[in-house]
Length: 93
Image (cartoon, helix red, strand yellow):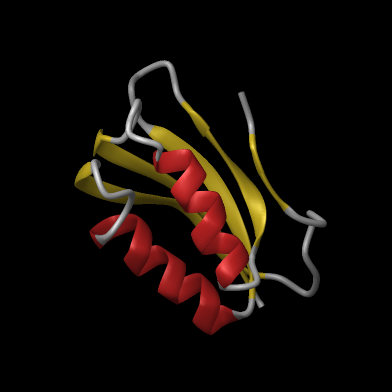
């Protein structure tokens, strides 16, 4: 299992990016959270099976919500974990 902390840059606020991130994380069976940052990015963490986390990384960096324009995905932390810290995926305000 793996944990990924991320920050997504570009046009990612006001375009339902967090809502679509939650939907994709749940589709992949991942848990964690995401929120808007004060500097106009979206930050968060996902945890789950390694292949699912890798798929989510691709989605965050290249797909996103339909109206988003992703400039860059930054990996803030990545580590192997024994168990998840969260029970579900949530959008923080």
